[in-house]
Length: 306
Ligand code: FDA
Image 1 (tube, rainbow, N blue to C red):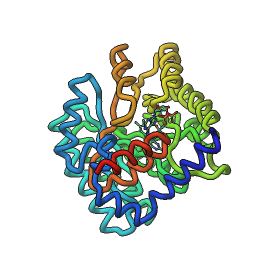
Image 2 (cartoon, protein in one colour):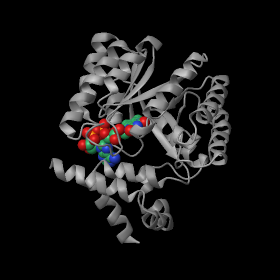
Image 3 (cartoon, rainbow, N blue to C red):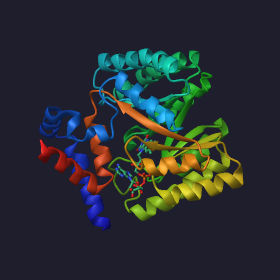
């Protein structure tokens, strides 16, 4: 039920911040079941997955997993990692794009620090004709994320895009405000725990808001990534896109509803799969668990089997 679902989300998402639970997960490693959602700990693992997906007709994007950074050194190291990663991946997997999380680049420490790192990464990507999207995170960083996106675009960096979360009350206004920039927008439902003042709480309401946000993007944005595994939302978006002639693709996460992704490719749609990799996979993993109660049973079975 509805209440069950949101209590479940709170429980799992707050467990993600618990050090002891994190330590337990580290001991069990990716074998605890995270390898269903994460390509592996290294770039070699990610490239292997990218090649397999490409054989199936999928586009891909890469995200290097990391945790929120609380030091300038950590933020610089995360930026260095991407600067090395981009030329490597661009050479071996042409057409692969990237996502970055601005919390990894220090946005919670200093917005201009994160802007500087993002500018460096996205400029390097431009040299390789690669595209880098700024993921959207918890609501406290949305204003700064949008400000960084605007600053990058006014620097002339057009190989970047944004994400808007349908559960936030503000997102439709944010989209409308961005339209003069001819944005490349990914539309998602939203994965963080947010209070009622900030975000819709009922799944049915989020589903309605998602369709509306996607419809608006598909009607007016330069490019829309319809990022969802919801078959109803996918059907609705395909119908809108056909009407508006939108430039768009579907996006899904590695390990989630792959049969649906294959179905969409078979129907002639472009589908891009998010391929996450890295040592800091735990927080990403818990967000995926929180999206579906049965995922936790799956985890419990895997831990039990060891
Ligand atoms: P919904 O939750 O309605 O799921 C539809 C169906 O898909 C479910 O019934 C189930 O069958 C299946 N499903 C969905 N999630 C599953 C899971 N984890 N495990 C197993 N089955 C699952 N969020 C954010 O806040 N910022 C961001 O930048 C991004 N980026 C992003 C990129 C891409 C490519 C995707 C697909 C998603 C994101 N998200 C995100 C996450 C997003 O906000 C949302 O939490 C998830 O996509 C789950 O919602 P759905 O839209 O899939 O619908």
